[in-house]
Length: 69
Image 1 (cartoon, rainbow, N blue to C red):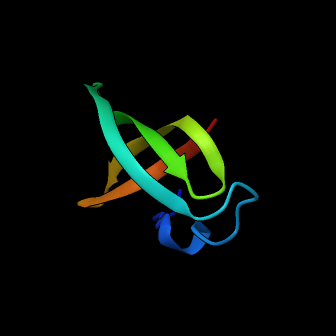
Image 2: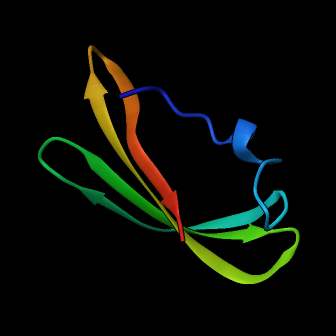
């Protein structure tokens, strides 16, 4: 697992740069937290669904994985 910053990805997607986003849901699990949100892009119409699972390792919150679909 590695710490994840979405900012470096902002200019590297075919749909354009990441635009606005709106948090939809935060689900707490026994060993992690799942977050889903609506993500917009500058060159694509409509909303995409994005999700990320965060885990705590050694006192730090790290992204286990993140997806936009």
